[in-house]
Image (cartoon, rainbow, N blue to C red; front, top):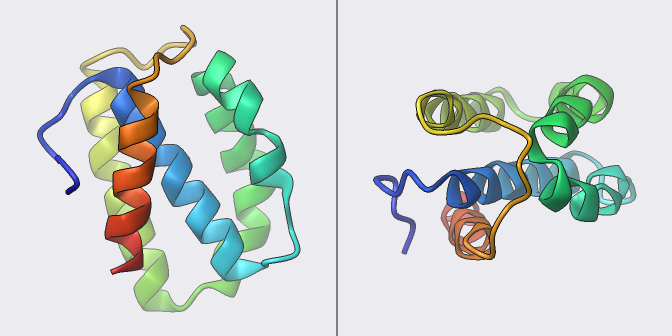
Amino acid sequence: MLNKNNTDRSYLFGRLLAIHVYTALRADPDDSRVLRLRDKYVAHPRTTFVKIETEVMPDMYPKLSDTLYGKVMDAKADIIAALESNGYNDDPLTEAYLPGYKRQRTAIKA
């Protein structure tokens, strides 16, 4: 189950990655740019997050329904707010990103 109270930065970055992957797959299942950046994301999360936001998501967001777009943006805003007070930096992620990723993927699909 998704723990929205978990403020571990790796967990939070994992949640953001899950949202990006889900969004990209919903918008364009043939576009693999987010998946290709996954290894870089783990090593350099902030830099790669910005790259995904500026180079990939502008192509994806217009393809989403207004409702899904709103859910995605709200979820990201909450996570980013938590990161800003708890380590929005480029330090490599720990293995704690995996539960954040998996639990967010499950939650966003529901």
